Image (cartoon, rainbow, N blue to C red; front, side, top):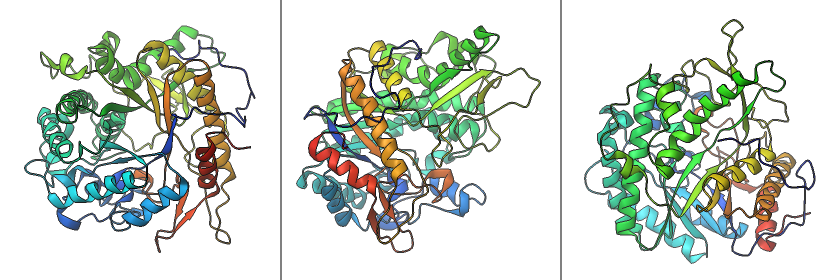
Amino acid sequence: MTLESHVLTQGSPDYRDAGLEFPADFLLGAATAAYQIEGAATADGRGPSIWDTFSATPGKIVGGDTGAVADDHYNRLESDLDLMAELGLEAYRFSISWPRIQPTGSGPANEAGLAFYRRLVDGLVARGIRPIATLYHWDLPQTLEDAGGWTNRETAHRFEEYTRLVAGALGDRVPVWTTLNEPWCSAFLGYGSGAHAPGRTDGAAALRALHHLNLAHGLAVRVLREVAPQAEISVTLNFHVLRSEDGAADSSANDEAVRRIDALANRSFTQPMLVGGYPADLLEDTASVTDWSFVLPGDVDIIRQPLDFLGVNYYSTARVRMWDGVQPRQRADGHKDVGGSAWPGSEDVEFLPQEGPYTAMGWNIAPDGLEELLLALSSEHPDLPLMITENGSAFEDEVVDGRVHDEDRVDYLRRHFTAAHRVLQQGVDLRGYLVWSLLDNFEWGYGYSKRFGIVHVDYDTQKRTVKDSGRWLARLIEGHVIPE
């Protein structure tokens, strides 16, 4: 995916525009994920997921935190729904906990689990909020992981079965479905680098997981088309917006670094899902890692299914170059480093630190990267609408006199909404923008040490406090205009 060739629109060079108006049908809202907010880890028959196991393992999560309680959203559903209505959300993207539906990843549905999501969806509809349901946001049932997890082809078929159960129960009331959230993270952070559950560090396993996640996506789309034919269907991918080293003596080497990481991070999903088959250069780059014999006849046709839009998650950019093998290899790829590699076959590429400013995650703030990404995707897939399904930032937030003055987050959102508006002006079919995240929550390997929410959560009392960023978003939604 070549990004730097796109010409950006004119406007404030720092993307701090205001007064920009979005179309009336441009969907504005927020997003969350089940394990990060629900808590109630053993309530009403829910089984353990890989994140329950991973977070209970000493040393895996900052502070020894787990998602066992999180935001207690499971028990505070009605008040959280009222909060969404108070903010004026037009859409809410949530994920469904697979082990809450199938405690062991197979067999009949747990009716108590389905009942929770029925209440959630009905509550959203009653408040005029559009439900967007994500089938998988990383919480694989532990029983399936014990049988190989995403390295086991059978897991894709279990996901197909799970999709049929959920769509059968909710398909008449959920208008938008997302199959997978950020399958790159599931495959490469979960099975390659070890930073995410299940914590494996095996490049070959990561590539097997990649394929079986792609296969699961295709199988799920086919089920959704059958069971919920009126619904819109999507997948959400986290794109790595790649930049080469400036001023390098060997520009061809840096182009090679961009190509290799683009194949692993981006095209390993977009090509099989949207075009068909895996990129030839990806197969060549990883030939020393795996022979790809797990790709069986017919898989390519299963994976490539028509979509109604593509979900785009964006937070920051990455700068890469080929490693000289002499100096210590730099690994500033924005992901938690626990010793493994998220880049099988490309360990000779290094990720360079970038200029700030940064969020609390250490990620650079680059709204131009979002504009570049959306332009590139629209150019490469002109008939496929896009939606920003996650964009947001972590900062050090504090409640002072009952308020959270998170000016940095307001500024971050203002600049990225400006980027979104600019691509609309250039003809990109962008359908909406969902802010990450509605609530402060369990931030995976970082536990409760990072806050992304537009609503502050006191984890001791579970008190919710709308931050200034939440108030700012409410004003934007009310007028569909970026506030002054």
